[in-house]
Each structure stands twice: as C-alpha cells, then as structure tokens.
Length: 628
Image (cartoon, rainbow, N blue to C red; front, side):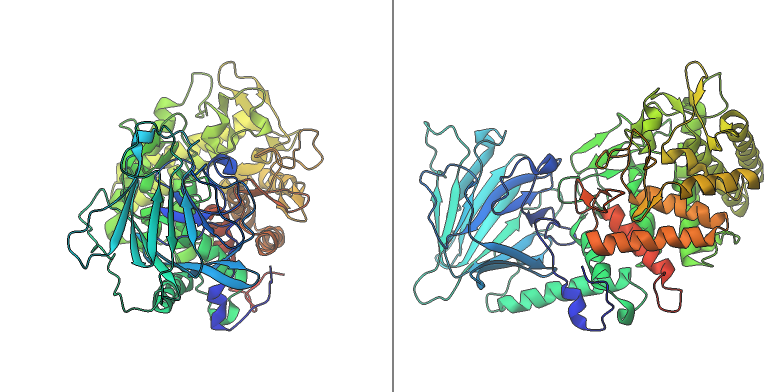
C-alpha cells in the first residue's frame, strides 16, 4: 500500500479488495464479500456473496456470478465451487465484476437498504442448500403484480429479519426451485438469474432489504427515479463516503494518504443502523465475520468517531449500557439479535473519557481535564453509568484475600488466552486494578464538577486504596513487573505476557521507580512492527496465537498512552509510528504477526482502523503530519 501523501480528490476512491474488506454502506446490514461465517467457513470463496449481518459471523444469502465462460448446472446445486474466471474489485462507491479487463457487472448502494446492480451478461444468484437453514424459512417467489405497469419483483425470505425484494428495472428474471412449492424438494439450493432483453445494453436490478422494525417504507422501486443514471447513484454514494471520511481525517486533504481513506472505509463499511438490541447507530468490529460489539472495542471506536462529533463518540462508547444489569455488569458482546453475558470486558470507560477530553482539548495527557468537552448535559449520564459499572467490580468481584477485584476468565480482560492466565483464569490481574484506579479518579473529579462532594471524597479514597493495594499486593520488585494472583488461594506469579506492564496506563498515579521499570519492560516487547503481546523470545510465543504474541490495536493504544504519561515520549512516538507503518503496509487486520507484520484472522477490523486514525490525528500536530 502506498504511504505517499496525495492532494488529489481521487484519494477518496481508494481501491478496496473485497476478499479482505467487505463492500457495504454506512447503516446497511447487507454487504458483498468473498467470505462469510467464522473464518470464512460458509463460502467456497469463488464468488462475491450477498451477506446478511443480522446473524452471528454473517449469513451468506446468494452467490453472485456473471456467466462469462460457463453455465451453471440445473437444477441448482448451491454455491458454485468452480472458479468463475471473473475478477472482483471495488472502490467505496462501486463494486465491479470484470472479465479480460472488461466490466461484466457493477453495483452501487442507493441507500442503506438498497443495492443497485447492472450487467451486460447473464448473472446467477444462487443460494446454498447445505447451510443449516430450515427449507420452510428459505423461500423465493414472484410477487403478483398489482397493476400492468408494475415492475417485476421477486421476494426472498430467510430466517427472521432477513427478507429481500429483487426489483427488475430492466431485463428478465428466471427462478429455479422457487414457488410454486414442490413437495419433493427438500433442499435450499435455489436460483434467481437475470438476463438482458432485446434493445437494452444492460439488465438492471435493485436488491432491497425489507425493514422489519420501524416505519421506514420505501416505494416499490426503492425510491429510485427510473430516469436517474446508474452513474448518478455511484456519485451520490461517493459523495456520502467523502463527507464521512473527511470528518474522520481532520488533518486535511493535503496530508491525507490512501491508508487514511482505507481506515475510514473500514469504519464506514462496518457501521449498521439501529435494530434489535442495538438501539443506535453502531460500528461493529467487522462485517467480515466478527460482526458484534464487545464491551470495550466500542470505547476504541468511539475515540476515532470523536473527530466527527462528541455525540457520535459518546453514542458508540455507551452502547453497552443499554444492557447493563442491575448489579452493574456489562455484557460481553452485543449484536442485533443477541446479548451475551457469559463474560464481561475490562473497565476502560474512565480511561476513555480522559482520552476523549485530551483529544478534543489540550492534547496533553497530564493537563487538567475539561469536562465541558463531553457536553454539560451528558455529564449526569456519564457519571451514573460509570458509577454503576465500577460498583460491580468492587461489590461483586472481590474476595476476602484481596482488596482488588478479579477476572473469572481471560475473556473478561479482553486478552482471552494470554499466557498470564495459563496458571489460573480466576485471577486478580494488575491491569484491572490500574483501570479501576483511573476510573475511580475520573468519578471523583466528575462528582466534584457535579457538586457531589461526599461522593467525590468516597471515589478519591477508593482510588487511593486501590492504588496502594495494586502496589502492595502485585508489584514484584525482583521481576520489575506486576504479578498475577490466584483469586482462590492468593498465590502469585509473574508472566512473560505484555499484560504484566499494562498498569503503565496509570503512570501518573504510580511511584516513579515502578513506572520506569514498566517502561523498560514494555520496550522489551517492541519489534519492528510494534508491541508483541507475548515476549518475542518467550517459549510460549505464537505468531498467530491470538493474545500469545501478535500485535493488537487496543493494547498498543493503551500502552502508548501510559508510556506518554510516563514522559517517555521517544518510546511513545516509536510505538505510534510503528503502528501507523504497520497499518499502511499490511492493512487493518484483527491482529498482526509481531515478527513479520502479516495480518491474522479477520482482516477488516474497526478498532485497528480506529487506533490508526487516532494515532494519525495525534501525529498530525507535528510539522509534516507524520511521526518519524
């Protein structure tokens, strides 16, 4: 990927590889991509697939194949497994199928519910009979016309909240294994095909997602003026993305790079409209397959959205609080049709609020916070929510053997399988204590602003008690790192996991000698590509071991902020610039091999894009907009 700065408007039409980043639209539940399901297991990867993100990991509804070199068998046999011979490419506003450098078909979004597709050769839309969907729930039929001038409409239904209308603008559609019902048919392999009619250079079709939760009707033609050129729809989508991307890249067009635009596109394409358990617009972790929010990635994504507006930032950050339990526990994850409480996530909300004020205000992490930047009317909501969650940790997650709260599993920390949890998962972990020191301090300061003097005193006292316990119970001076404690028997151990040094986020509260030891420990995890989550020389290091080695965005941002608080600015700048370079070269993957920089797992991850965008924003204060 080019790192060069460009001043040309074409930067907004950055190439998008649909085998890596799903092609979608802000607010849409539909996307086009080459993979769906956990790890892409539900698709053979030979075509572009129309995928619904109403369900976990994405449900591929149809394969879309222009028939340029071969026909497909009848009756339909599911998603084609043979190569299509077609090349797939995209920009933020246009998806194309090409053959021998000629465009065979193309698609754009009209709005977040409508995809406009046209082509010069026949196209086949096939469902997959092997997917675990009851055949009664998977239905394709023609809608009887209500007048002679009506356009041809084919309706498709598949499970709750998945219903589409295919509206033929020009051309002729044909169905295989659709209505009428055949009692011998026990498969879900169905097909819709479309072809040109005489005198028309293209066939054209609208794919409209039916709205099931609100009064948001579209005309049968999805609001499309029949005379509006296809190119106008492309231009409108391009303009919408341009406005969005400009908001997320406030350093100006003259400093904008293709990587900036691709990061903005990852955010854009991963955003869905309110529905189900998600009560407001939501940036998912991904529309590749990790299509949920987990109750800490929303904080990281909210920081990137702050460039657009504080309202959008706070809306993203406080999404999980719609589902907080009476005792203050946040869910582990949320999607449209599911809320999971099997685990929870670390309390980084106080840290996030301080970071938001830093980004929007002085840019100095050691300056006094300006709570007016969060919006005066928002302060009571912020205070009440973070109070409730903080109470959960101290009232529901402490034992008699420690003054510090514990995790029940590595998943609670967000570092699911980090090596520090190999010995015991029910663990008093130093990162948790550090986050709660910060959170108690945030609440003390905000309580004072709100005039809650007694509560301010209580939170300040809890902050100091927790800080003292963190140092007294978990600091190992010999190892120069924080230890972990078994929540059952009080035994402690040290680890080669980077999580040992996470308390540096609380550098402004900790003794200076401890802070300097933490900075040295962090430096030992630094590779050419960034901070390895397991020491690179450890026998437990794994290049694609999830939290047992790879570079991750959230750990990088949290630790960089702490190193900067420690005034180790040279190291902080290095951490930041290496992460920026990593993303410029290797994209926005879930995590990265710490020794090669190669992206691992889901390759279209919003919190990776968000950390990149925040780092670029912070780096833009330098003379040339980039760290060296």
